[in-house]
Length: 628
Image (cartoon, rainbow, N blue to C red; front, side, top):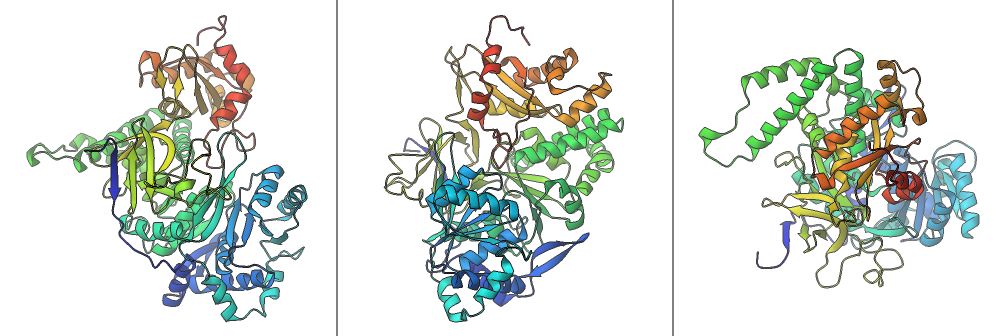
């Protein structure tokens, strides 16, 4: 290419009327196919369909109540709730009333809630239960505001859905329609608060155009996944833009959606709902694999399962080689008969059972938020479930690139979605321009370029590219690989650049390891902090006759450390000696949402871990520390 950048683009496939908004997607479907099953809600041991017509009717009733309560077009309305059908109902009711949805993560602390209420100016808040109502009341007092707080049910205590319905009865259809149609593609649909490692969260302005144009252009490239007769269960937080963006896509594709608030019931819900595709993050797939491996080992089938994993991986690798083969037909890679026979055997023993555990109808999964170990991606595809990795940020309304069933490369995050350009800067940073790129940060649209959040900046005048802060590369077919974060890149005292992500992926492949954090910036060598999976630790101790081991005891137990050393060596085999992990520490702790060490999409907050476990890190570099 003649310019100093390497970039890949996909042309926009569908244009959308600039005067429309996201509510038109529902209004048109409810008018055209009111009987279409759009959602499903838990009912005893099964699910009850909610048609497009019935859903819109429920939305309109709540929207009338919001209008009667004083909501004006473009007014912000906060939602503080776990993922649920009611969350989606409220989201569309806010849009039908002309408002702007402000999600609040269900794990948010009172000070975070107070900041969002103060910064957004939300005068209405929907909450899932009484506990969250009290949290909002305390946060509102701290913020110096007094919003109306609505309970997302007909529980009968305090203002709730029933009160809102009653309040809205006098609102005429014409007034409701005036509010619903007041927004355009260029006006805000949601204010999604996202933060980096320091400072207060900033509200990303996601427009109706971001949701609508992105959805309308994604469906044509994923018809096998997000199409009619497809079904999915959403269990990721709806407070995160990824789940909501996919939910709008499901509306366009007429995909029936169910919601899971308690992931403890996920397996049962998968069995009864039988989704055809799932939306997940790497940790979900890692845990599914670990649970499957654990069951096999407990049944005395550890070695056959290991062979089944190898077979699935090789099967998938050959599929990919065949799909991208460009040579003479006579030299096309073939799947050997022995591999076919082994695959058929393991399908009966393991793969089929895995698919049954996930509902029996699952053929695709979409994975985002961070990188998934390519070996796991190959395993799932070889076992009959194609995992399509994608890439994006809150600032790109989530998906900006994705693998598609007809064009997939494991180990990449796919090609740009229609209407999107991905560019690699001279320093390797990923830049994005396209239909999903947000309108800027709330209250800072004019200063954003000068004051980027955590390395991110909104579109710059002239070229319109968003600086993502991620490091990546594009291959000759336009597939993007994201290799790490600029801010996460470890530069050792010797000047060696080390990307921690690939090492951590291999470490987490071991069932005993729950989380892995590789460190070593400005240090003489690379080390790692490991946490243990509590359930797997119990099984490990039992298998080795160790009785009951606490995390603290496991941290120094010779057999545990020997096992972990093998995992470290497997990770080191992927990199040069200078990039390898020299020592590791086992933390007597769990990294979780509650501890503040994981984000809502289950990514490790690296800076929080490094700060909170600074003493353990220092010990790894003390001269007297024994080599691991």
